[in-house]
Amino acid sequence: MLRIRATFEKKGRAKYISHLDLNRCMLRTFRRSRLPIWYTEGFNPHPYYSFALALSLGYESSCEILDFNLTDDSITMEEVRDRLNAVMPEGMRVVSAAVQEQKITAIAKAEYAFSLRTDRPEELFSAVEELLAAPEILIEKKTKKGMKTVDIKPDLEVLTCEKADDRVDMIMYLPAGTQTNYNPSLFIEALKRVTEIPFEAEDIRRTAILCADNSPFK
Image 1 (tube, rainbow, N blue to C red):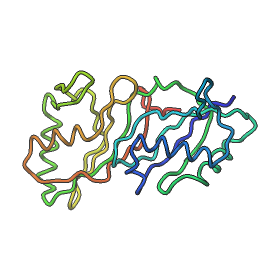
Image 2 (cartoon, rainbow, N blue to C red; image 1 turned 120 degrees about the horizontal axis):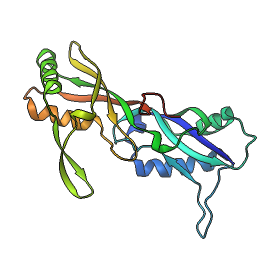
Image 3 (tube, rainbow, N blue to C red; image 1 turned 60 degrees about the horizontal axis):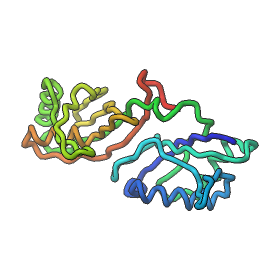
């Protein structure tokens, strides 16, 4: 049995496919590809596959992770990629396929890029800097036990923050994995609470899924 890890893009119109619909979409994709995917055993066999991290609706990504097993170990990784791409919906494309190397528990963080569009970029840039310099960044986060106040400052790492003519562009690391998952909407929400400068978050993209040492998850 081959344990495959495919990395795929989810862009354009595909960013509006919810995680639940993505599962249905992938089921149809596997059936159409006619790959020898391994089925679960029992009274209701179904193709086994799983996604490493759910992606928020409306976000794009170039690094989504899909795990599945094949019963034929003679198939090449290039054939796996090409057969899936031949039947993938618009906006989704498998970038690579390889044998799984690490457990899902190795995922520690994700890299996100996004833009904050505004007609007052100078002031917004200053507001962002002030927020990042604050001793804490508190947000209300929904948990299994209800709403909880969380300080995201210790787990947030800003890689770049640049001012443009009509926006502020940012790239940051946020925790991801089996324990803690944050996405840029938390930072954006915190920013809106501390400034009256109007802005819209645009082009939010997940650009990497990483281990604790910042190496790519494989």
